[in-house]
Length: 411
Image: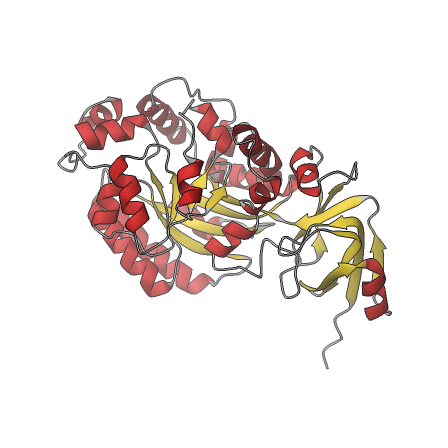
């Protein structure tokens, strides 16, 4: 006979459940790896008289944060690159650094990245894995991880197709574990329309999420719309066919050719044309957009068009991107940067961009990114230093939180 699973109660000064208003003198009941109940402390103790109890003190309990876009391969590149150079030059410097590292360097970088994410309260990450050959050697991550295999065929289409087929076989054998898998055609300037179409077929057959970089830089716009600029010249020099640079944006080409499955995650979306906006408004599918505020600032991009996405009901999620364009993997800092860029935004909406919205994009609404009965017990405790607005308190937090994943505290 299986032993009964114990229930444990955690008390806090305040709880931020997300789907309901904040609760004072409150707590959560956890049984095994799931949340059993959320409510006032006196009600929880009355309903669960035999449960173990832990008073966490003057803290706020909130859901674990979700980083919607990250490249853990590049954790060792903190401070090594500069955003002031052209985007094509930045890519070439990044590629040069990549070539100087070996498999052990990348595995160490990924492990360090996971550790830093957890340190700052990230309990789920959508990580882009640039090296398919690393996937079988990746250790079990300490947090939930969706591993998006990055594929491109700017140099060799055969190699990319073989890598994709091999990865699908690995995905079939591996199962989900503490997360899942996805596919990431890097960008239209590095992945052909044929490769995008192939990925769409695989995605729909195996129910794998898809993530891609689109409309990221002004140089990308110049390349596709006018057939010019540093990115155009660099890619032409390495043998990329340039016959798709005929006056349509990368987003236009993607949408008009129906190259993405419904719900695909679009990273950056910084430079939109009038036609892009029209197509997004008319699209039957809805594609969540991932914004990385501090990477946006690193490259000194023009203001992100948040107003358009809100008016079009396109959900915006937050990510850190990589340490090749950011200073750390701290989602609290990323949320603060979003608030500083858009001071009119309700702080609660910003928190949703790092909790409920990415959970919904992963089809894990009700399970991740919230404190509610039936959700997995991924939660944080941060100091509650005032009786002020709870969402503002969360954004202002500069202390590493206590972190629980599946009801077990991370050490």
